[in-house]
Image (tube, rainbow, N blue to C red; front, side, top):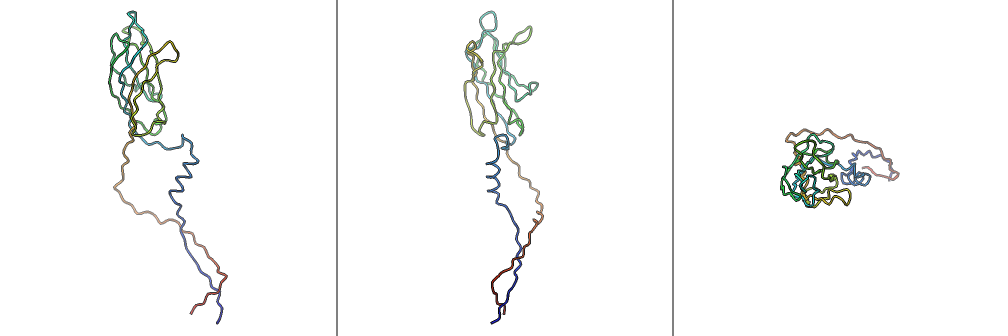
Length: 193
């Protein structure tokens, strides 16, 4: 029986597991690196209470201005409610959020409308959008005051709805992945007939 030493050549393609890559990225990622896709922010200003009296008669003419990030020029406003410290609005707004504005805050500021001169701020609150869970509705009272002299609060309801991901109907063949070849020498005897 003769002994033959042979050589076997093998080819392989290394394809990393997507599951392993996702975990590695997520473990190494900070909150700012986690991707947030585009979404709609549905925001309703319900009512306010205990607002600061900014007018001589002991009341205010309040309205609320809302904007995302520094986009004050694109702010949306509620109607002005005359001579009240406890207005009811129940007004809904929608904001289109791209990936970067998802990391901004929504600023809600209550003002007293003045016919002459500039409107007086009755307080404001900011809501960080990146911390909001998608498809979850929040209803809360937000304090407008920075100190004990302003007890004003605004009740709001809001939720972030992710935009649907569109699948492409175009199909294209994928290129062949690069292969790596390796030679392995076996130190065992192999008999070939």
